[in-house]
Length: 141
Image (cartoon, rainbow, N blue to C red):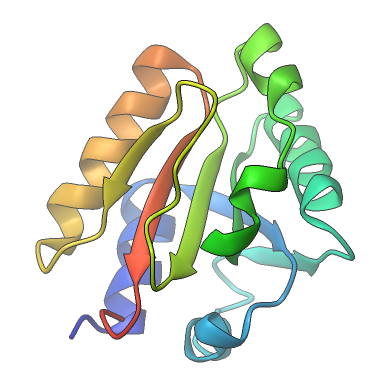
């Protein structure tokens, strides 16, 4: 099992993600509890689309951002704005089943090698400038 503090530490301190938004997800409660307001800003959103808008706004202002959500709801996201405008959005999704996508979204499973996974997905976001999903399976974190 991975430690929450290591997850946030690497994502915020090493990779410089500073803004997070999302619809609160019961499976991520422990992750929310370890958020540090000295490292990041988190805004709970009423819908996943609102979270995407908030994260895109942060990105436009020069802040690396991500959304957190249940993987069940990914299929309802409309990411065409991100694809059409090269917005690299990190989607951190939690669930029992890895989501399937209609659009060509890169999806990486979080593994025990936390730093390597986070570095890989960050590098992919920077080079492709398209949305990516970091899938956290139930019980991993």
